[in-house]
Amino acid sequence: MALEMESGGDEDVMLPGFRFHPTDEELLTFYLHRKVEHKPLAIEVITQLDIYKFDPWELPGASSTGCGEQASYFFCPRDRKYRNSSRPNRVTSGGFWKATGTDRVVHSAKPGHKCIGLKKSLVFYKGRAARPVKTDWMMHEFRMPQLSNKDIFQPRGPEECWTVCKVFRKLGPVHGPLKRRALGE
Picture 1: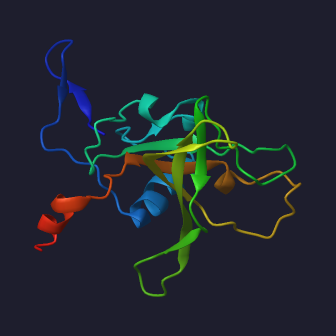
Picture 2: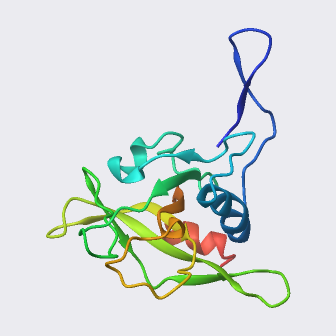
């Protein structure tokens, strides 16, 4: 995601050389923590958006060219599938995001290596559950750890209301002769 600023007149200028490539720890301890505590940043580098209202290629800043390294980051409200459930709703107009495993614990790099959050990997599927088509769109969803063992019917705390989502297109596997050349065979 590039930053823009005004220079002189009405012209927007991209900041040359700027790269936003935070670590998992930075996303959780700095950006998501500040969002949960309602502490604004001087420069908005992560957009607040309900990404489930869009298919991934429609997201602002999303590239459908498959550039590999590029990713878009969003603060997203955590919506529930059912009113009295903790199960998230990840359905869009053209498909759905499906989890590809269990939550991974993100540990602090500081001594003690305490749990600072959870990371979930998801893949986007076009269509509905009956006949889905897997795409090359991926998302890493970061959220704060649950701070207590509250009953799921109790109102959720602010730590559960927001996630940081990193959306990107993964490059597909190399097949045939190209793969053999890449491996030096």
